[in-house]
Amino acid sequence: MDDCLFCKIIRGEIPSAKVFENDDVFAFKDINPQAPVHVLIVPKKHVANALEGADAGIMDGLMRAAAQIAREQGLAENGFRLITNCGRDGAQSVNHLHFHLLGGKQLPERMA
Ligand code: DGP
Image 1: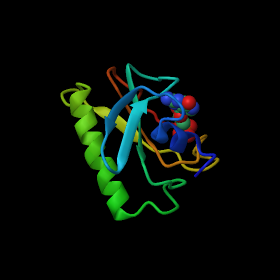
Image 2: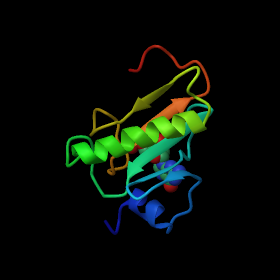
Image 3: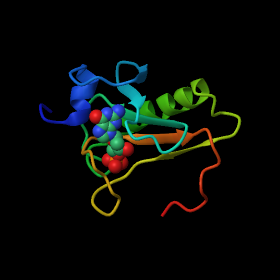
């Protein structure tokens, strides 16, 4: 997708603080972190969100990457939050599927 922000980050056209990459997944620090660790985990294949085209292969790759990144970021002992926003009510602002990995502090119990 030529105009997609996260596709441009994956291609290296926009700089990012990369924390993980394999053939299918790219992960980088959120530009506006909401926790000491706030990483965005995205499929390299452009998928708009959790409603559109996120097949089992993509989801498996994202979940495996999330677990590896969580361990590497020191979150395995105390835990973390892994969420994806979808659409208007979900407050999705970038239309490329991504999971937020949040941790490094006690997160609030309420999510909404
Ligand atoms: P969401 O609201 O769930 O679509 O999350 C989009 C996230 O993307 C938001 O937390 C801020 C982050 N973000 C937006 N633009 C950039 C950027 O240019 N670089 C990085 N690293 N993160 C960005």
